[in-house]
Image (cartoon, rainbow, N blue to C red; front, side):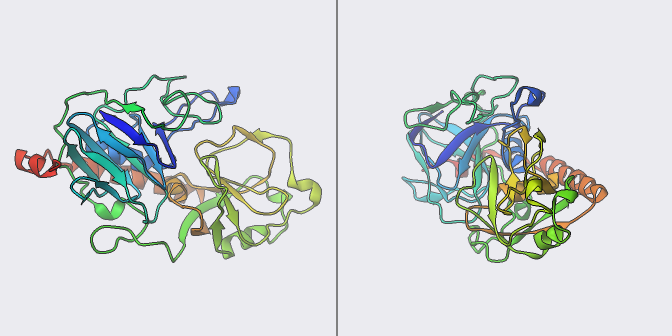
Length: 341
């Protein structure tokens, strides 16, 4: 188990999210990067949707209260063992000896990392999920981010079998290129997120979609788990009255455009209904790209089709299953090497 010494910027318990409650105004919540959550869990033979810790930009400081195994995936936020000054790269399962401290140095690209424990984090489920919904104040640890003094307990205590595992395809772990030594480089070239046309074309000027696709957008500092606020050229509405509409159901990945013409790309904690028109919708296979964009990062959008979007999602899931099947049970020597000094 891990004791929280300091909580980091925003660390919350997340799983694959809750479904079936949108009619009550309850969004799915859950991991913003579901691919990274799955990788962290697969490293430990957990269910893909087991609760894990989502760590945002500046990570926490955690002390191992006893020997335990953790798995890391998602962005490289500079995880290291303080006493040994030993870096822990994403895509690995590590044995932590009791008393060692895990911290995050930061300074790498990407916005979110995931830390899993054997069997998942032992937290209550609310409406069928352990996901923290911050606006609603429920799920995870009493509906809030980590605090100093919190304790993270695994469901499967004393399960060390996965220590020493490594994800077989490191190139599939991060959307950012890796520099020598495994750490990522700051994004210079923008990531490209694929989109399909939204349902409200009539609410926009004829060239609005072309403007969206031609521009390089910057993630604004007010972005959060609800959505990325993007800065760039104005996406004009066809008339001032068309900047708003009667509230209707909204989906993850939707690019809403309020009256100021600056789009908002919705993430896991998005509201269930919205009154801004939607110009385009990011495809599900590229949700992890949106999730890993920190403030200041550039991003571009490319048009695709529904059929291509479905094929991309199927290919992504197939690759995840293929790499998971290649995971090997590490031998004793690997486990000893994975342990803290």
